[in-house]
Image (cartoon, rainbow, N blue to C red):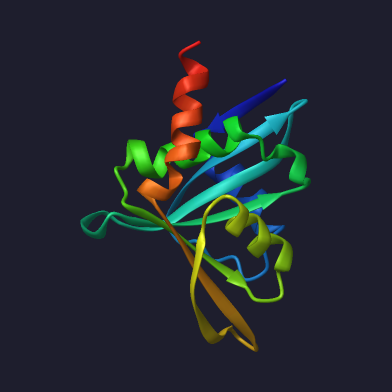
Length: 146
């Protein structure tokens, strides 16, 4: 059985930090996705700028199996519905092709590259606007309505 883990930012933040190179989140909120009493994926929401309706999202997972439409919808619900953000931003090392492919697969658009943004490595900036996330948010709404 899968369930979402809220309110355990220290535990979830440590778990994500062990899986993401260059992890430096500052102040953050997290949501973990658990299966069989262990974390299988998590999202860190950080660098929130309320005035601009923007938040940065960092994800980690032990397996791609976590990424069901329900899970993706639940994890996007927090920034877009709870916080009312207009966009979510990700910063990913250019060498992490798997993460970049996943981000693009759920609708993130590559917006630019910060050369040597991670020391010797380039940083790829991607964004997802609220209207681009509607398929995930609507899926979650439809599945909870019956």
